[in-house]
Image (tube, protein in one colour):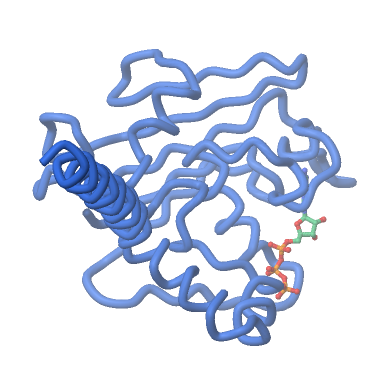
Amino acid sequence: MKLISLDIHGFKSFPEATHIQFHEGITAIVGPNGSGKSNIADALLWVLGEQSVKSLRGSKMQDLIFSGTSQRKPLAYAEVVLTLDNSDRELKLDFSTVEIKRRLYRNGDSEYAINQQRCRLKDIIDLFLDSGLGKNGYSLVGQGRIDEILSARYEDRRLIFDEAAGISKYRKRKEEAEQKLQQTEDNLLRVQDIQREIG
Ligand code: ATP
């Protein structure tokens, strides 16, 4: 699964409709301080279903809508569209291209769509669950998080890598299976004891 493009309109410092195309390899976004680089990462996180305004560096959801400048009026809504290449069908949708849209109006109303079909926020969150790209994945690492990860204990850091690589769910299943095995062995021992008592 690869990112194809991100379209931002009215989100934070982007009053103009802005199209960002991701090409093969690494895409770097450079610009002076305060020019909106982190706002692009916020837009990505938001369209993937982020609900915590704090994680998006705001205090209320309306902070995400372009608030105007001395030369420009505030906008009525913020919209972000993320287009992904799904030819490997990693997202459980039978489309080679998946387009996720999220829009927020000043009155608090929200709209969500997957491939132009209106949907709920939950549908978007569910779509990315276990894909490594969802809001709980570690595919998006904020500036503060880097320090946190570097200074974490090595056991905690291992958990972060496991989660990012999608290994955690297998570790959990392995632990559950081991527990069941242990219970079965205990039961077997008890049966053998009873057999011995009877015999
Ligand atoms: P740095 O290099 O310092 O980390 P940056 O390029 O990542 O900076 P951002 O943090 O993405 O910059 O952008 C900050 C800018 O976005 C500020 O100028 C701020 O005023 C503007 N901004 C944030 N929210 C809004 C909004 N709702 N309306 C208009 N502008 C906004």
